[in-house]
Length: 576
Image 1 (tube, helix red, strand yellow):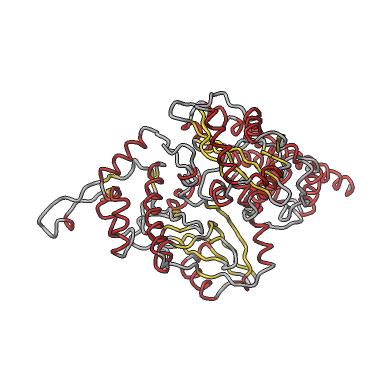
Image 2 (cartoon, one colour):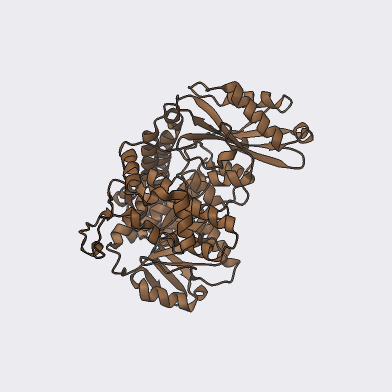
């Protein structure tokens, strides 16, 4: 009888493993169909549909997960089964993944199933893939994701061969001019000796689509160096194709794959090979960042967690309060040796914040589903995240217990954070402006602050609380917004002029509705010091005009999709 029970449990575990993998495969097919449609949407200039596809693709994971978890409950009573059952299920699942082309994503999907069933309270490598099932060695499958081109021909001939492989169903505006621009740009970057030494040119098979642009990503290999490159394509106003730029600087490529932009549409059945190739081009990018940039944000979270655990094992610094002014809605801390911040919603908000906890969560979800146009940091939501108690600075732990008691649980050896967001760490703009002594860098930051606010607005998002402490600045000097608790769509604010009156108390008696906004007052709180206010007014005076904001509202209401190139204007081929 006992033997029959064991055999039944083993068969059920095997069946369940197959059931979960079938759910993942269905989800990935759905994901791939949406991604594969990116080229047609690009060729037809269907920009609104492109944004809808981004949102739909993000929701696929949760829908698929819910379906599988429902099926699991209909198959077994999961909470009544011993760990031995889940160990057996994982073992069978691992066998099914032995030659699976998306094995790493399938592991994450399995983790999500276990996490949903046990509410992320069973983080155990015996029953889930806390660690990867195997070490993936890139290379053997490289031919599946990379096209190689003849290097014995001319530079122009190489480009012609590339565009003969990557074809679009729309004509080029001026193909001869595009080829000339590409050749000139490459010859400026490589001298004759370097060009003569080229032995390999490789381009990733998937085209990377985002916004109103498409990118071909590759590298030129020479005996002593490798030159990564990106060919940036855009549609003209006449709905014809043009080559906008050739990017050969890693800094420019890094911004394209940055954390403040929506996820690429790049169709592949071998994501591990694509990510491995990308990391060879951008070695400073972490694996999890590249997975996220491709839209595999759930697996990116898994890879982040593994990377973070490894970092904890190889570091000894403590978690501390993040530098800067303490937030009214979020408690923020970091590990100084690691490049992210941890954000926990406070139990209570300041009187000035007329919002709820659910409102804050909704705002973060809104940003997740929005084209962040390079100006809003991507955030990743975690629940029941365990951190070592011994690594907490006492000042930080006291602060968290005072402000976020309902979101944390302090045990003898660990601190469990029940709900939080993780975000790329940047230098708060107020601290940057306070300490930066280079006048030109300060001017650049203020100018970019204004551009950041404008571009977010043109993406149909009103930033709300625009104090400069709510913006960060990257190592490349790019200003990014990261405080979302007061954002809303552009059609919600009512932009008003301040009534003109000789009465000094007129403002005190002014009737103000909750959604009324007075842009003329912006200069008093976006930046504090007078010389910074003067700079902001010099560069972006329209920000203080209600008419300007109403004009942006009108554009947004018509569904006009803006195009903001992620690289410097001076490297674009057609400056007009």
